[in-house]
Image (cartoon, rainbow, N blue to C red; front, side, top):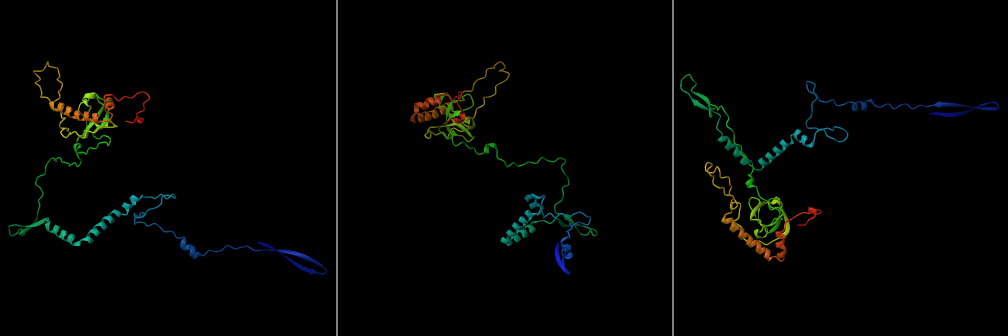
Length: 314
């Protein structure tokens, strides 16, 4: 910086003023070499004898400034072998709990183990009197073909799977059939079968639907319900509805007999139909709106133009 300074020099009667300028400059501060020398030294990466960089498997590093790491959390778990440490800690905890059983068990196992080699006496003076022989010999012959291995399957068969029914399909509920020759008709659920099917009936007197089994996916449940608890339907299971195959006919005798006989219902099925329908009709009669309910079961379910199925309340 320059600072002006004025000095008065007397010369006789006159006085003159002269100005002189002095400049001062700041010198840069010298940094200590000792402090910079230590900080400026960079750590050199560790290398092997061949010159390759040593990678530390226990450390993780940032890929960029966004905080993204090079290895994920699960990858670092395996790189650090933490699963081995966990297993080792569990084993040590078991040993600390009861050491006596562990030692006793290990001693028993050692005693049970047969040695791999055993001494066998050999005759002759120049044969060494004994020789080490394997306790369990290798097989002399090996099979030319490998036998197929039988694999055990732990999965349950379809027949052993538990059957679940919708809560809306309880016995006595009036449902609408969606598929089959009786599609659109309203029937009554009699009971649940062990095969996962529903036992339903029309009744036959009202809409012509016989006592039959129906899959629950082909059924729409309604809010109408009857009380069929008075009936006993334990005898009507899947075996009861099993078809009886007719005996095979002689092909040579019946060459020109092309007529096929329709299977007739057995007396047991006819009796079961009347028994179940009696219980269902009595439940309909006991209902307050028995007349409307009869007309409801006789009619078919239909959709017309402008009717939205998802807004219907069954």
